[in-house]
Image 1 (cartoon, rainbow, N blue to C red):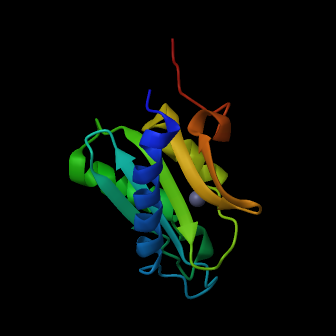
Image 2: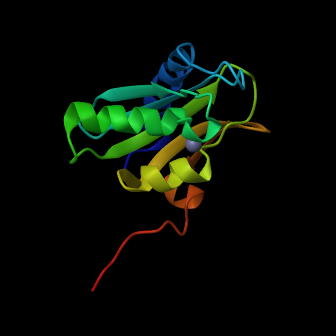
Length: 139
Ligand SMILES: [Zn+2]
C-alpha cells in the first residue's frame, strides 16, 4: 500500500491530465466540460471526456469514455489504480452512479478517486464511493 506522500504527486499529475482532457469535451447542450483520467496498474494514464448527444440519454460521461478507451487500448485485463475527475466549470463533479458501477468492473477496491466536491478537491477510496456495487454471481 502506498503512503499518502507517495500518492500525492501522481494524483496531482492525474488530476491535471483530467483537466486537460476536459478541454476536448463535446458538451454543446449542458456546457459542462468534464475530463477523467485513469491511472492503470501498468503505469499508463488514459483520459476521457464527456461526449453529449442531441438525444440526451445517449450522452457518455468522461469516466466511462476513459474506461472504454483504456480497455480498447490495453485489453480486458486492465486494472485501475486511481481515478481523477474534474471539470472546467468550477463545479463539484464526483462520478455519477452509472460511472461508479461501470468503474467497479475494473477499479481496485482500494483505488483512490480524486474529484472536486462542494468543499474542495477530495480524495477517497473507491470502496467508499460505491460501497454496495452490483457484481453478478450466478451459482
Ligand atoms: Zn457518469
